[in-house]
Image 1 (cartoon, rainbow, N blue to C red):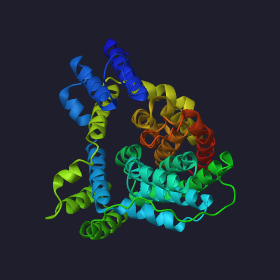
Image 2 (image 1 turned 30 degrees about the horizontal axis):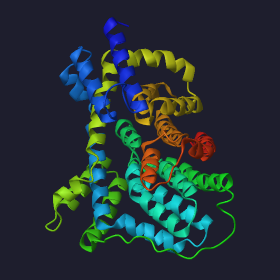
Image 3 (image 1 turned 90 degrees about the horizontal axis):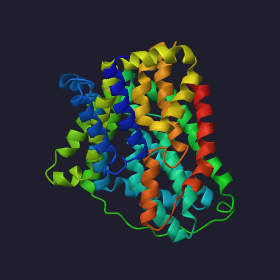
Image 4 (image 1 turned 90 degrees about the vertical axis):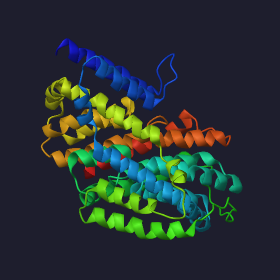
Length: 404
């Protein structure tokens, strides 16, 4: 490789290391800032031109992510997530039932929408419920986080890395669901079983009375509009419409209103996450411009060969080392080496997502749950999460290796 290629590798490595850790020493920088500064450094040293940086941006993924955030903001404003949580509480009559319903609700909603947003909405409700019941909140919080991660495996819109894979692979929404939904369903059952076994004291036999949880405001005109728009969006995806286009049309339809001030929705959008993705696309795109991905392909292809399981293990390990989104952007160049590229894309999606359950730092959803719990005075520690996270990750990855 040329000296410019080595310089590019050094800058990209420093950027991804900062993203994985969440900061750079001596600087006040979050992941979005690190991605932007890394992209700027690559442009400054001539690793890629401004035009090449523009070409590196995956506009389909950015549009899909923006659209799903807008849609989730509308759902939250309408009170949809609060309604789901309250229905879950009313149906559950035992610790086993409450855990099962939390896992199913978080997994199902994450498959339809975006896992990070789902845990952001549901964590306070889980804490409120467990406090009213005087139960240990830790196993239920772990169920919420792991259920959201596992459930998001099933669809292109479930999490950011699946959005990237859906855009790059060209797989249809229905093909993706048909291939990975069985893994997600079995994975949700594994989450429940592992947590029950890891926390036997919490799940001793017994029933409890339905608690009074905090009531959420419901905005019925918007809720009725959402009830019409979301099924149409899903129908368009199932019929083969571009996923990003279907999501964008749904978001735009919900934004067209005379009653709701737009700034209420804009405040719910995670703008730093969009900036983070844009910067990361440029950072990883520089590797292709400098021929580094070609070198990586030449080295890794003989090692992986045509073995999907080996590729899945590499994906899971790298996802925990540098985070799943950067891992997907780096590993997607290896897909052509596989005998079945379509299966390779599906394995990349499953392994990168399921690997996020290994540790508390494995996914953004996990960190959101832990951070919100801390504000309520509940400490979800690294060790407490690890007790359930390790067996859940190993077992769900085994299921994915068998089914995919």
